[in-house]
Image (tube, one colour):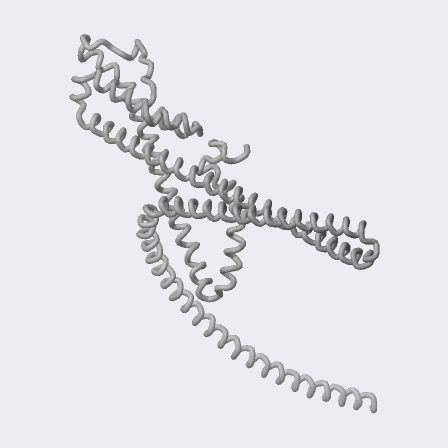
Length: 361
């Protein structure tokens, strides 16, 4: 009976503890529900702010892209002159530094010769005047230490001068290579665009007026030949990196194409022979269409690159406003030689640097 009462008391105690625990858990659940509701409201507020910020960023990005497009045309005209002036100023500064280093080197050599002469004179005086041997030894040691210090300083200055000269030569060489590549690519692209535009206009005119093509077969053949010459000339200019070959091609033009006796007809056969030139005109129109597609793809790629640059400029502007020190650290890493080398290897298929011999194969 006593055991039953003890068990009953234990069960009642456990029941009270369970009720207290249940009340605590219910209070904890109510607190968590209130916190969950507050977090849900805050999440909705943050989502609303995010949508507003996204709309503002999109409008700001459009405005920045338009301003960048306007500034691009302005900077393109001043880029050539500024690059030349910067290269000229860099070369002048390099010459000035080299001349100053050479003068410093000559002064140190002259000072070294003077100290050596003084040391030889003191040595001879020490040999003849044995009474002042101790003082002469001290002076000799002092001059020897000065001579060693000057020699070390001379070696350091020579090493620094060699490093500065090598860095200046490498910088000038990289600047010249990049500028030559930029000029060559710009010239080839402008010539190719002009030639493709002329060829497209001529082909459209020939398609719009078929009677003109039927009545003048030799003129259409000459036009096709000239267009084929221009396309071959553009291909040879883009494939050959030799500046001498490029200059000759631009000045004197491509050699006249070899005429096939099966395609070239005498003018006396008239309209029946002009009809046989239609397959050649179809091949010409196909080649011109491919050139137009290439030109359109190049323009689309340029537009895509401009858009990517605009989207990349937005985080940079935000970072510059929020934390300028982080932007400076990132710029130090971006303007390093390793980054430029990786960028050149990445863009080498687009810039055709490897085909022109500016990068190792």
